[in-house]
Amino acid sequence: MIRMGRCGRVFKEVNTIMKDVVLAWCAGGLVAVATILMLTGADSLAVAPSTIDIKGFKFAPNDLTVPVGTTVTWTNRDEETHTVTSTIGAFGSSGLMNNDTFRQTFAKPGNYEYHCRLHPYMKATVVVK
Picture 1: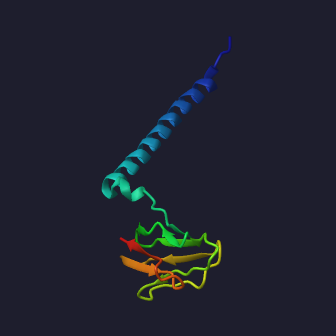
Picture 2 (picture 1 turned 90 degrees about the vertical axis):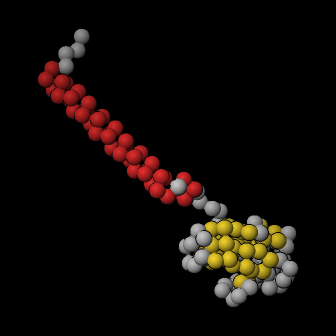
Picture 3 (picture 1 turned 135 degrees about the vertical axis):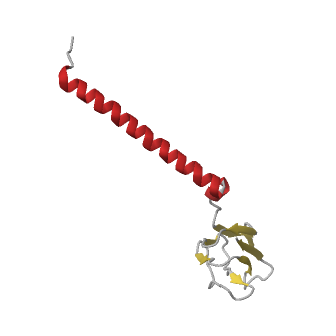
């Protein structure tokens, strides 16, 4: 039989108090998360994909909606060279070879239509909210 003695009892009391502190801290964190979700909506935690593939002479997805401040990355998956060119001149890439990427950060809300300068029938839109 093992006797706890005075130190053992003190340790047990400290351990119980620490458990209570940790549980209170965790509960506080959960309350904070729940409050944020209620104030902003659960959808605000969902991260929209910010990548667009160029494949088969198409932009995929053809329409992408992102929040303000998002950086969108286009990757050319075709063997042919393509560009990402804004219809109104807001942004534009040079010729993208296979597996090359182009990145654009959208700082203002709006509808940004773009196309491939080499293949003008390739059209798509980024919607920034």
